[in-house]
Length: 225
Image 1 (cartoon, rainbow, N blue to C red):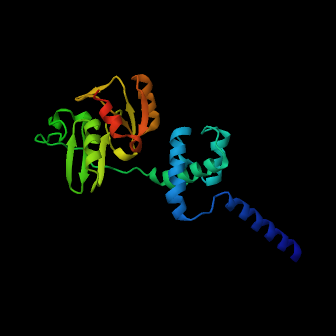
Image 2: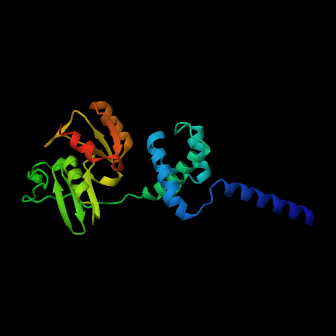
C-alpha cells in the first residue's frame, strides 16, 4: 500500500513536470528583448486575430493555434515565440485602456501645413509631450512631425477610422495608398484591429497594411508625389 502511494506520487510529479515544461522557461530579459518582439512580428504577419484571454491555459491556447490553423505553418521556435507573446503580453492588454479624447481648440493649427485642425475632426491626431501637445489634420502630417521630434513624446493618439474612437497610434495598423483622401490628399488610414485594416484595404484599393514601426519618412513623403 505504501509502495503504491509512492508510485502514484511519482507519476503525479512526472505529469506535472511534463505539463509545466510546455511553457518555455527562460529569463524575463530574453523574453523582453528577443522573444516577445519576434512573436509579435510573426503574429502580425502569419496569424489570424487570436484572443488569448478566452483560453484557460497556455497549453490549450497553443493546441488551438495548431488544430484550428490560426497561423500559417510555424516551426517550433516561431510557435513558442507567438504563443509567449500572446499569453504574456496580448492577454494582459485585452483589458481595454481608455485614452483621452482628441479635443482640438479652434485656434490650433497643424504645425506642418498650417491648416485649422478643428475643421477636420475625423482626421484629427495629436502628439503629447507631457501636458503639451500638437494637433494635426491627418496621420500623414503627424508622422512628418514625429520623425523630426521624437524626443520627449509621452503619447500619440489617432482615431480608429471605423469606430472614430481614440487609439494608441503606436499600436495601430495603417492602410496606405487607398482611394480615401484626407484634407492633405493621400493619407494613411489608421485602425485598432488588423482585420478592420485588411477589410478597408480590400474595399478601398489600398496598397499595403503596415504597423507603426514600419512607417518610414520615405513612406510618408511618397504619398505627396
